[in-house]
Length: 238
Image (cartoon, rainbow, N blue to C red; front, side):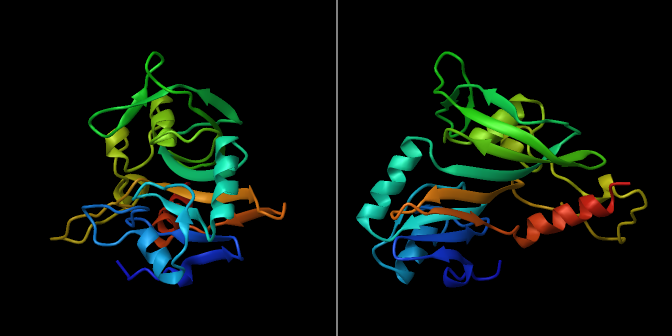
């Protein structure tokens, strides 16, 4: 993977906040399985920053850092009061025509590190889903989480029988060009690689109130792997 430049990935910056388009495979916080994390890189750029929320290691997209304690507290209150609007895009298996469907299914964290819907032991978890586009065998969905439980979008989609592509933990299969392209010939002596090698989930947009009262709405473009996936689905839809 190309070396990640924190500065080049900045989408928005002022005296209070920095919003970055996080690439996949970079942990938000320290991870014993990887040598670098996003927070360390952020503090090399501006040593007083604090991260305001997290994205899973494989998830790409918009993530917010606060540059001072007042900004951090202001953002923390917005998250607590569910005033931060987040939009994710996900490619899921199957064809699903959904119009602002509300999923209210409590989620419990498992000792194994995953999560599941659990109506008895779970904590409140609410997500709204809408279809953006249907392809031949897959669907691009928009997810708007209201709460912020661990793996919330992934668990809710799995519970709807439309797991995210490449999300093996929750029943999602890898996606291969040979499965979606009608006339596909694999070069002899080679092994076919999946179109994307991580959970196909991207934090597309985030909106929040700045300290001065202004509403900041920041959009994060798809990274290369997600963009390639979408282009191949578009190209081979018919």
